[in-house]
Image (cartoon, rainbow, N blue to C red):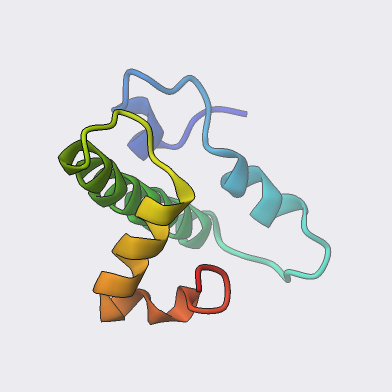
Length: 90
């Protein structure tokens, strides 16, 4: 499967993220246009990157180079836009 153009620009990835393939193979999901799957994948990737970056910054302020569950939970608690994660990260 050839890579979509947005993935060709990133030198550190040799294939689309797993989410891209899961959307294509999940039988509970109807037909999704390629562009929609790519946009959803890019949005999820950006969300995870931003969340991890904030969590790492917090861990660094605490003198660590490793993100702990507490760092992720604290970042979630400090940002109301992440309230949809309340059930996962109390």
